[in-house]
Length: 196
Image (cartoon, rainbow, N blue to C red):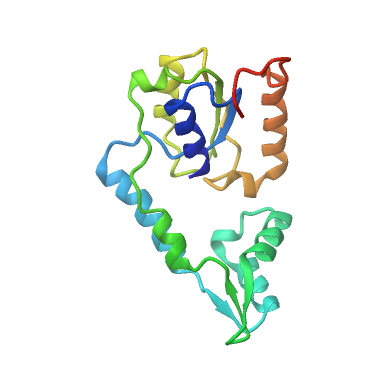
């Protein structure tokens, strides 16, 4: 949701950013059956997740053994567990700070879609990154953006063995990609063009 929101901000108000490096923005799929499939996948996976435990240690063990978190970098998973869990005073249980029902509701929205004219609006470079095993990164739509406006858009090779959660699965490669992209941009101009 974050990558799509940043991209949409630049499309709606060109010049907001000097450059964007986006990891798996959900964009482009026009087939209602496919958008329903993506939404159903996210909602179902979220609602199946347990939400309370007798202790923080039990919760950490749960996430460490959960199949959907098995591909995560262990340090990233530890940081998630640290920030995602809170103590519920009345019950003295460890619970998710954001309940699965609230998280699932965030996934019930239309996928971002831009017309060719809207794709041409950004004034900054926009670089896309996706995961090799992702079922939510519709590569053909990003290739279309590159074809429509190659001076704005570029698409990197998929990150190996990664899903939609590529930044959490391989933070080192993600960081290296960001550093490589930053080296190719003019972010440190004397007089930046953007307001951010």
